[in-house]
Amino acid sequence: MTESRLRTFVALADTGSVRAAAERLYVTESAVSASVTALSRELGVPLVERAGRGVVLTPAGRVYAGYARKLLGLHEEARAAARGEHDPGAGRLRLAAVTTAADQVLPELLAGFRRAWPRVELALEVGPSRRIWAALAAHEADLVLGGRPPAGARATILATRANELVLVAAPGVEFDPPATPWVMREPGSGTRVAAEAYLAEHGAAPPVLVLGSNGAVIAGAAAGLGVALVHRDAVRRDLSSGRLHVVDAPGTPLLRPWHAAAGPAPTATTRLFVSHLVGSGWTPG
Image 1 (cartoon, rainbow, N blue to C red):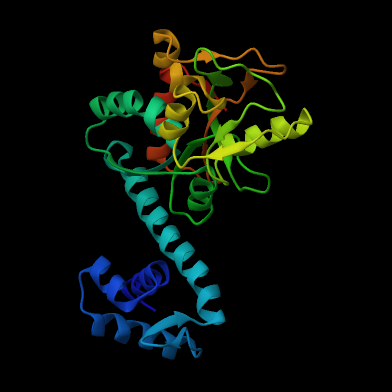
Image 2 (cartoon, rainbow, N blue to C red):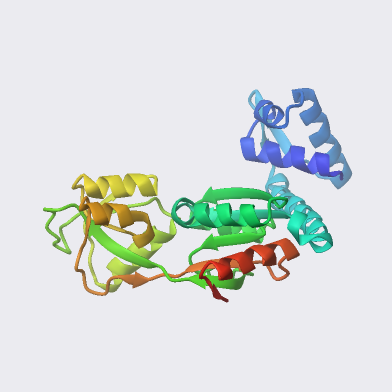
């Protein structure tokens, strides 16, 4: 059960085909098939089965894929922890951040950290809230920057930063709570969850237009498609230019601090980055 076999199997599970897995790993299709066959033989259960001209995961394969991701993530975490403990300034840090944090909060922080610790190996994954917290749970990230950790997450909050969600609209858009459309992110986004909770709390069910990114939501609101609940950090320039304005809606703005959270045993390099956050104005968790 080598690391190579696990990576091959996870690539197959992620991509859904032997050819795509081979392309991702830069190996031959026969090498992928041989690796998965050897892994199945070692486990004593079939992990894949034929489906037409391709293969699909068996029920056992789907279960094992989740464990395989965690095993690989834990291996990377252990490697990063050992390197960081030996020399925190030359360790590895795997960051995961929600889109708004990656766009508006992280660039300046990363630039300052890079200047102070140029030998740290940085990796960044950007995605919706559910994806980044899943990455932490699977040991695929050392530190997450996002909203509050979901219930049940094994996350230690190491630092926080003030943040607001504001309701915005283009000039001239009249806000009528039951009738004005809301422009929202896709399900799974933290701001989508906050918007739905706000509407439920106020007993409103307005029309909803779903767009696939923060930029699209902001652009949609600026084009007059409706109102949008967004992070103030993401629209500071639009508010200053007059492209958008803050809607005076009851119960807003919503206080939703940014959180920097790690697993139960943060690596030395993770703690080094958190010290940089605190030095940049974040509050220790």
